[in-house]
Length: 320
Ligand code: ADP
Image (cartoon, rainbow, N blue to C red; front, side, top):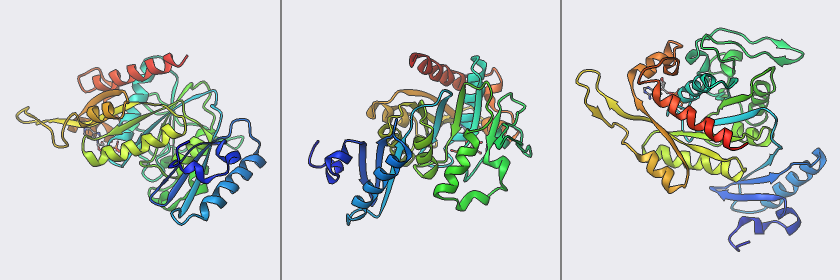
């Protein structure tokens, strides 16, 4: 261990349990491999780490993430560094494209601060019912069962949720009657907040897809989100560039309002696979608003989503 590794702040017995510890801008995140540990042991470890780091001047907040054993149903998380980059759009289209590849796909809209899947998948206003204290996913006209915070609370109501409340909301959506669904795509909120930490803690995803626009700032944030997955032992399947190249509907000239190729370059720099590029196209937004995501079709607009789905599919198969 190098002398600059923050793990050196912990006694050896504790450090041995911690797979990574980072301290950035006053926030310490310790990732603990909790497989096989009982609740008491988990609590003891969490308390010991929080106590020790709490005494450090440079630490104002400590989060301990206990990574769990993977569950049977595979979970693919879709994340981004910031909002508005098209993460929900990609998740919905990826779900449709993967279902076409004969996977039994379900979608969890865990973006509790801005749930948009009911609109994109065209089942706004549907209400999931509970059976044996667990929710039943709701069907959507595009054939993907979905559970979204947007189905459960009024728009804007979940905005103030933090910590346990956000985590419990996620648990309700994931621990539902998913039946024969074998692949659950989870549309995460942007960034690296409470929902992400609960996700890693309770439901270790098989892998994560990250979405970014080509601008530097969005990319830096996406890289940070990627780092969190990486630390928790969740492989980043790859990066997707969204809103690349705008084809003018009048003259057809292609311009690059957010730059072009930045995500592919960043993927190379971060040593991550690049999964593909989705153009900025008014028809994508219009289709999403109408509950008709482009991946339902066969045209040029559907193609990038199907290409990305093929790569994710191949990645899953390669995991055995
Ligand atoms: P996020 O989930 O990252 O917050 P959304 O998927 O909700 O982002 O997308 C934000 C807005 O941008 C939505 O109105 C969506 O329809 C639109 N949008 C997303 N991707 C594209 C694209 N490639 N071309 C045009 N509009 C897009």
